[in-house]
Amino acid sequence: MAMEDLFSDQAIRGQRLTRGGVESLLGGARHLIDCDLEEADLSRLDLSRWTFERCNLRRADCAETILEGTNWQSCRGAFASFTGGDLSDATFIASDFNNSSFKRATLESAKFVRCKLTGADLTRVKAVEIHFDETLLINAKLLEHSFRDATLKRIDFAQADLRKADFRRVRFEECSLREASLEGARFEGADLRGADLGGVRLIDAALFRGATISREQAGQLLSELGINVR
Image (cartoon, rainbow, N blue to C red):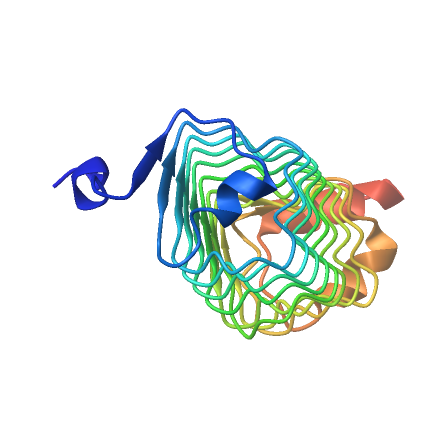
């Protein structure tokens, strides 16, 4: 059954919505389709279980907004703020939230699938588990974030701030750590053979103690000293 059919009695289509318009819809789960919420102030509202499909949330203010169990499909939200919001059990699919802020947000069991989070700030998010799959986290801020025991597939962490991140026993599949900041990160038991380690300095090689890397990756690290591995 199509998503529109599931929410046909509550769907709001093609509307430009301000805070007042959204407040008039409160009181139950809603399904917004092709709606424009650019720069809308949605802070501190309760939008639990709402569905946003192909919506524009560029620079929207969702600070401290309750967005538990929300669904986001093909949305655009560059520079949106979710600071301090509750996004527990939220699902983001094929959405672009580049340069958005999730600082101090609750993201317990949230899922990001085929999303673009380039430059996103996920500093001090509250979550035991966040699921990322086929997602761009280029230049994102994930300081001290724990990925422990996860399998990461097609995640691009290029130039991301991963200082003190926990990658213990993580399996990397078609991922990139190219030129990421890794100071203090932990990789014990990790399988890094599926990760691009380009730009990682030999001085950082101690971070990979207890991890598995390929012969090719080892050669890449040693090449900085002019040593050829054959």
